[in-house]
Image (cartoon, rainbow, N blue to C red; front, side):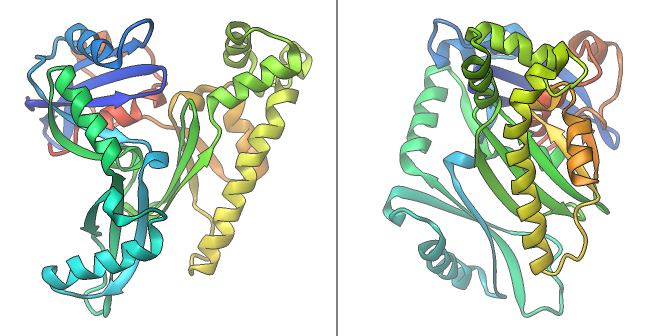
Length: 329
């Protein structure tokens, strides 16, 4: 079993997952979730790690939301590693909207570059130094050792992308909605949109005069189902979700301009928002595309331990934690 585990620091919940390699797939070793209530984030992390049965001195894979970092896929001439470092600095000056003194730069040459091509695709990531410092302090306070850091969308891609498919991955979180287009297993673009589950809840509070607790209950019970509660909840939420559809359609236009003559063949919904009642059929009707709820455990052995830890079939909210758990296995 790996000495590290995946830690998903959500806005309202903290999730941990640990796995081990099993043939061509994985076996689940530990899994736990904890809401952050009346305690510090470090205390909540300690609590959920202990609940999962993971040692506090373990190394941890952690992901940051797309909204907290600057990412860009750039095409640059094929260069040596030394030349590439200089080129990345130049590209960052064009695309990172803050002073480069305020960020740490990382880059990764993406697989799938054409051998005969004179250019290569490189992923550029700029992480604010202040955010990195907070992460270091947080993990230190929780008694954990940082093992690896990435963005949440790359955690998703690890467990949801498929080698020969053209997909749109949507991460529907509490405060934001992030998207990644993946072609034959590799990212084509990433984008973060303001507004997530919290915006839906606040809309119900405003339009229906509900308390926040009631609004959460109504959202999870009725969602976008027009046949429930006379469609009142769906009527409030549909305009907000139509804005998401509009952003997806703009993404399709951009992809067409980049040479992708067809829209992604499937939309995959991840994150807690993926379980909103009626969302799948709503998006199918608007986009005329196959839409499915993510299954981050599709490559896991379904043994007794798995069924003890994973009580239900639909688990899109575990996508980031599981993607982090299998990183490096």
